[in-house]
Image (cartoon, rainbow, N blue to C red):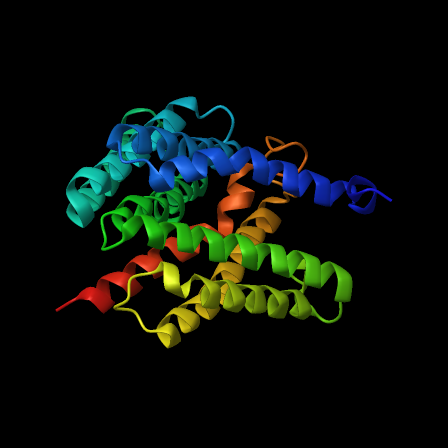
Length: 278
């Protein structure tokens, strides 16, 4: 029996999506040209915002989507060229763009739906623009390219380990009200995969970091990334959604694939920056 015959349709789709995403991810990690990095990550973030707006802001809010993307690009460019201060300024501009839209475009009303829309827009910047812009802050850290690759590797392998162990062993559910398919065995499998990957990655990272700290960080990323997955599942369940879009060959949307990394990027940045602080 061939490998393709042994794999399920979902597994084939999963690996095909991975092959599609690997080139732009590696480009963002190792490319030295800032404009290329901004272009690659900027497009990925814009796609996530499109999926977010499609489901949480409404298909008809094209103007609000454009302002949201402008805010995301401002946060990304600010983080890339000016560090944390630029990131903060970009997020402020994103919120300011939204405020302009709500003041100038939406009619004055006492309808709570307007407050709901404002809250969702602000959530998008807090949940998408802010954490994804940490890609650029991590790259500016000591051995930043390696730390960024480490973050993506641990997150991807933890997700893969959770998928395969959970689908094979099944067992008690992790959080059935939020995601009925996720199991405790899957969480354990993901954490074990993260630990193994962290141990094997140690020699690739700067020598100033101890093996114990890297392994603890890897375990934390396995758990924290799973929390990011559950958080996105909770949002989708609240909206009555299965996938954020059908962009990735029937395997959900890009936001579905980045839910764990959105939580893990800030965690790695703060770990590295505090470890390197004088």
